[in-house]
Length: 161
Image 1 (cartoon, rainbow, N blue to C red):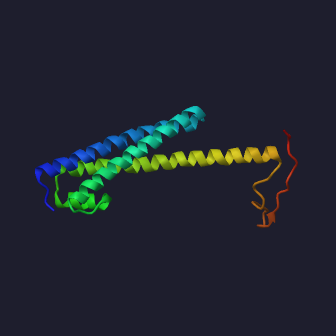
Image 2: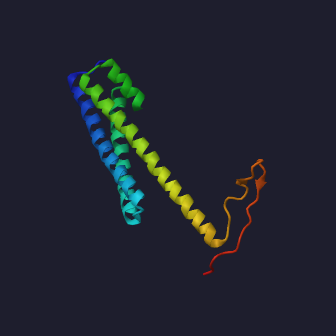
C-alpha cells in the first residue's frame, strides 16, 4: 500500500509517540538497575510502580499503532509496520522505526540484567534463610574428585523465635 503524505505523517507521529514511551521506560529501567545494585528497597518499590505505569503507556502506544494499521487494512505488529515501511521507503519513517527497534533491544537487555540481579538476590536471601533455619538447599550438589555425590547433612537451626 502506498501511503499519502497525510498517512505518512500519521505513521511518523505514532512512531514518535512510541519512541517517547520507550525512552521513558528505558530511563526507568536504568534507575531500577541502580536501585537494585544499591539494594534500596523503598526506591525499588517506587520504581516498580513507575515501571508498571510505563509498560501500560508503552502497550497503549503499540495498540494505537496496531489500530491505525488495521484501519489501513494492513497487518498489525512489528511485521505489519516493517512491511509498510518497506513499501513506503520514507527515510524519516525508516529512521524512526530503526531507533524504536534499537530502544526495544536496549530495554530487553536492561530488563534481563535487572531480572538477573533480582534472581541472584532471591537466591542469596533463600540461602541465608536456609542457614538460619538449619536447612540445606544444596542437597546432592557436592561431588568428590571421582564424581561421587555427597549428601549434605541438615544441621540444627541457629536460632528460634
